[in-house]
Image (cartoon, rainbow, N blue to C red; front, side, top):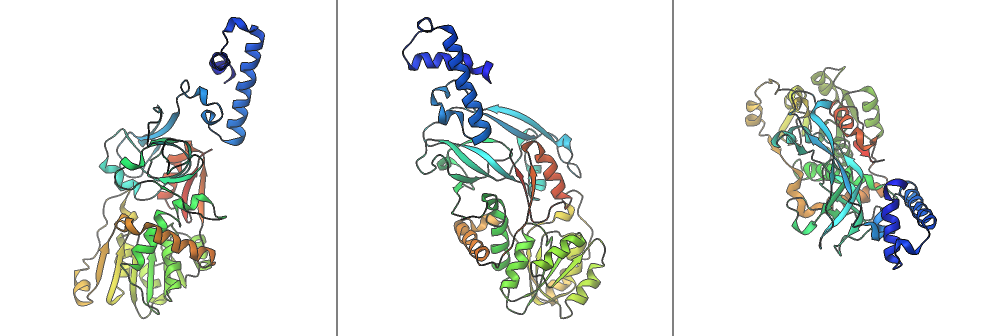
Length: 392
């Protein structure tokens, strides 16, 4: 840093003081440049601040470089390191109405696996992140504020929120003492997926039996807790004994390890009177087992099909007879349906957390370079609660 920028620092120092380099002793110039460079280095390392905020005269000489993960090979089965490539991109100077965001936490979610199939090779990996605004020419997005945005797998983003299509970035509401990373989980998209997807589609009633698959994930763990708040009996299905034990600490009445138990038989024992509501994250044979025990007028909310994201669809028994004779309702959804009520879900979950009625868990992977690893581990069930990456 010292050698790379000392000439720029010296030149700008002379300009600021209306001096030519001949007006100062060369030793003084070099010493001043090194001292400023050292101060810049210290501020970046120890205070995580933008150099252009402290030394704005450098902004025209130092472009911001974003590190980006690209999707460079089509997924075929489970993702591997070959599907991703880390690149760098120099960002343009801000224009009016734009801000520069520096990523702090990034999300990895199951939906990314099937969604990326819609994008051409060479595209930026999609996803949400919590970022800090380090430079701004937008009055409503001030420097220092925390923002959530669908910026993808990148360390820095130049954004014009007024021209953004679809899910627009938004400033985080006041979480109090809670970590801002929760905006990627229980106080963000997964939390709203649980809140709206369960309450609006399953319309649970007190005393009913609710089953949640993928129950130890970011969405399923919240669905089960909300169901308990509504007075329901809750059965969670997860993939390890540790996860099942965690679900019981959240208040789940029963937890089934689908890897070691016969799901259908375990459900018969846990739900002898049948199942009224099913929140489905996985599809496949687990859903087939649940469907056989649904009660009359049962409601099924379909959030995901993670069991076949890395493989082809699983052959299951035709459920049509049950839909007709049990008069079942099954509805898939994408949470952006409730975009106009977004803050409602966040504030409801936040209030329950503050009351001690909702708990959360995060599985944190450190380092932006480990984005693919965190993503692949999550798809294999390596996370409990929300899987996130902390930029370091």
